[in-house]
Length: 83
Image 1 (cartoon, rainbow, N blue to C red):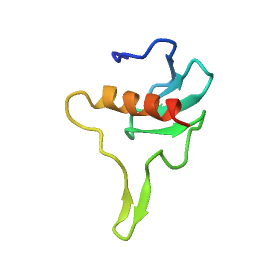
Image 2: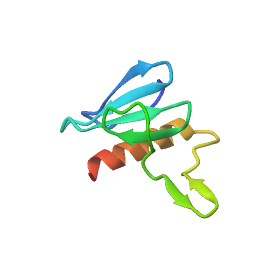
Image 3: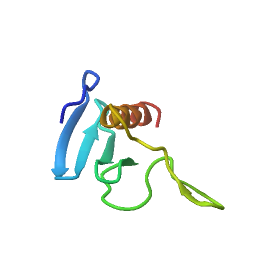
């Protein structure tokens, strides 16, 4: 896990493909590395934050390229700071 976290946030590995991000206020998000998305709370399945169903199917923000993992963690941090 080579990502930077804001002060007070913790990140722990739940499974080889999932991490638990926790804020100082004890709010949590589950980050799914394999599917490159995150869910609010301690959740192992279901939709990811930001998923939208359109006429063309499911749309989700794409995390790819250099720095995708940090961008994913940063978005999860932002989500926890603005519940």
